[in-house]
Amino acid sequence: MIFKKLTKIGKTVLISSLVFASHCLGGPTEDIIKGYAAEAKKSDPKFKDFDSTKGREFYFAEQSLKDGKLMSCAECHTKDPKALGKAPTGKPIEPMAPSVNPQRFTDKAKVEKWFKRNCHDVYERLCTPVEKGNFIRFMQSIK
Picture 1 (cartoon, helix red, strand yellow):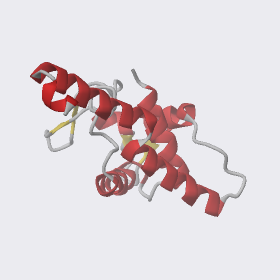
Picture 2 (spheres, one colour):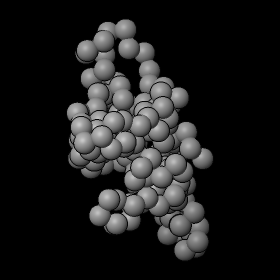
Picture 3 (cartoon, one colour):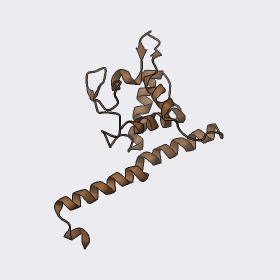
Picture 4 (tube, helix red, strand yellow):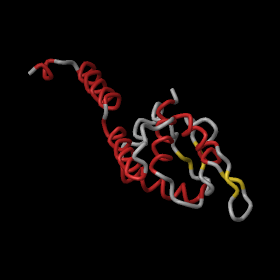
């Protein structure tokens, strides 16, 4: 009943507030983080929490690939995760930081797909749950 009495602007504000609150108080990203934490605890019972500083180091770390080329996450996603990136094919990549791209890290299947592909391209291996959690925490820290 109250919702019907709200103006269009009021409804927009209410819905936006609820979406924002779900992202801040939990939501899909936190569910993904909890899943990585559970995986991390299986392999290391002493695991406590993810570290955004380690996530930052991971993002900027340059790896020497088998072909001798240096590669890092920032190579395609830029040194500013709030900016548009560019794939080697030239295709634009939406910003990594959820502060400017709220859909980032909200769909588990997409998150896994891109970690699998990008970890292979940059690190030539799969990333660990700890690396994934640290990475997401770093991205969440960017305002």
